Amino acid sequence: MSVAKISELTAESSKSFEDAVEKGIRKMAKTVDNIEGAWIKEQKVVVKDGEISAYRVTMKITFVVK
Image (cartoon, rainbow, N blue to C red; front, side):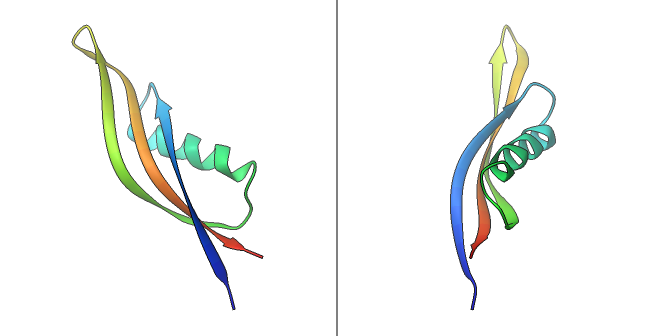
């Protein structure tokens, strides 16, 4: 029997939403094993002087607990 846990986090990138997702998963993988997937809950951009300065994603990451 498997037991899964879900953690929510927000990650940011100056490049793209995809880069923000990859950064968030990479960071989480440093402290958690057995990541199974991620659900993107929210996407947001930060605007400064009429230009996008950052891409932010809030996601829920699922991992199996051993």
